[in-house]
Length: 275
Image (cartoon, rainbow, N blue to C red; front, top):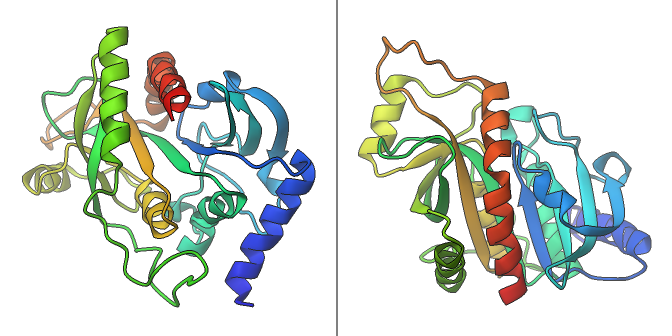
């Protein structure tokens, strides 16, 4: 057996031992400051990443580092309370291993969230942005020997973010009176925030928000054939001017994400109920 697949199977087998064999229907990845959704889960099992075979350790601000299994909106779900990032020094295989583990556990849908910088100058701090597409400036996690057990060599990304899930989320937000944006997320390596020149470049190529995660997870989920819904919380407006005195700060990002978490939680819960 491919050693990479063996690691995935080992992690999945360990998790099933902890859950008594119960398999989740929906997987959720919670980003910086967005762990509040975990509180809404009727948790049955909480597994620290440190206990799961072959898992990395989450070192980013606002990432607690737990895998939570329980019921949310009538569905048995697994939620990553914090994710792994390429900038933490992990290779892409380890960054995305939890997504393959969730696929091995049998999830049928993946919901991803993140805190992102607003590139679109009409955005405001606290806005929720449904991700309709992305631009990838991170190493592609599908490079290398194909995981044939999970998917085909070449993965189509025409509708990387499921159109039906997007439509449902828009309807849920409209019914609840929650304003939502829709745009293109650009993923870069970090951990440095982008320069004003980079911000202007990203805007010019069509990005609406920028962050340091999410895209690798989406690529792997789509390779596994799992439909994806993604949402960003706009936690700061990226600077286009070198003379700006408004500087980016990691703690501010977490605080802004936390302030918007209740609205995102409502949309996620209703979306899960509709799946």
